[in-house]
Image 1 (cartoon, each protein chain N blue to C red):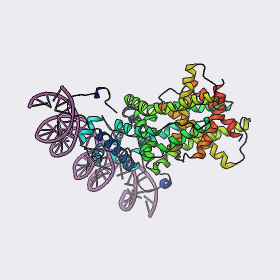
Image 2 (image 1 turned 30 degrees about the horizontal axis):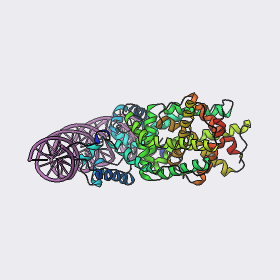
Image 3 (image 1 turned 90 degrees about the vertical axis):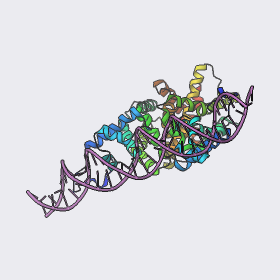
Image 4 (image 1 turned 90 degrees about the horizontal axis):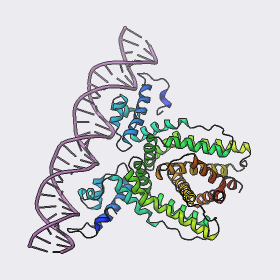
Length: 208
Length: 208
DNA sequence: GGCATTACGCTACGACTCGTAGCGAAAGCT
DNA sequence: AGCTTTCGCTACGAGTCGTAGCGTAATGCC
């Protein structure tokens, strides 16, 4: 996850792959029990059954470690065809909400995003391992809706990219804000109302 | 800001109001220079010219202090009548974006939100001093749009509250996500595209 | 098999931050 | 005046940080 280029076949003892998974799992467990601020790398090392120095050899600090630990939670994101654009949107919203309902994601994700405002490398790491995957769902959903005839095909590629970014920020931002700032449940009812607003707009949504 | 009820007139030396403002200003300055994680209360006290013990007598910890320091940034939020619902939305989006463009808000706001996922009292403090003020703008904007005839009047109060919450999460969430996660500028062009999407929905927005 | 190379566990370390306690002095009220 | 609360200062134990050094374990190459 962090040393992919020179990993081919070097002399010497290879790094234990089991240690990686143990450390990441221990990080998530510590996030659940302690939260971000009280999480210490020494504690994570003890939980994982490795030496603290081993942890520092693989990750440069708390930020990078938590990003990788949280990123694994997003592996479950996928976009099955639910038959309509509305159903696809509701589905992905509820999937995202299910991840954000887990305490290790709640406390970890926002913290690393906060740190990334002062660390470009960290933000890039978050983008690669988390954000880019979510954005792929938006692109796939739109392409599928266009093939269904629910959305008109794009003509200008630049315009298409802009609207995709916009939709992504709206969807992901709304779910995160609802779940973490408003601290209200992102349930099926909310997902339905949100989808209705996203598809029809304010006027259409109000006249229901 | 933190002891309003028993502040009336007690015997003894009153707390220095100047110290409060100096501490909050020093906190913001430290956020700009150091960011959330490297900000220490000892450093803030030194910057503010007060003793560290004074700081601990007024705030229980880093979280509460930063919430109060960041909350003052939101004093500038207002909602002048720009003539149309679309213009009002664009205006409030750009105002919010202007706050989020400041580094003390970027690093501080997300961090306390992250901490609030494990601290109900902190979340309540954030809600009172920051979130509630933003939500008021949404309510005012809708009322104004209704008086203009741009939106139909609400019939069911519960439904009205739900949609207001939804719109608030969408607007605030989208702006925050764009600014902090995507790390792209929230400029007039983006605000216009977002407003168009919010008012007309996906289909209408695509057929422009 | 022997050798070079790298990873690992362990211990120890200085530097730093935390939050609190105790003190004398300052500043208000009645 | 006398009382009360705040303030600045110093000092403190506890905890974390990130690193260095050492001996040992595991692998590839000759």
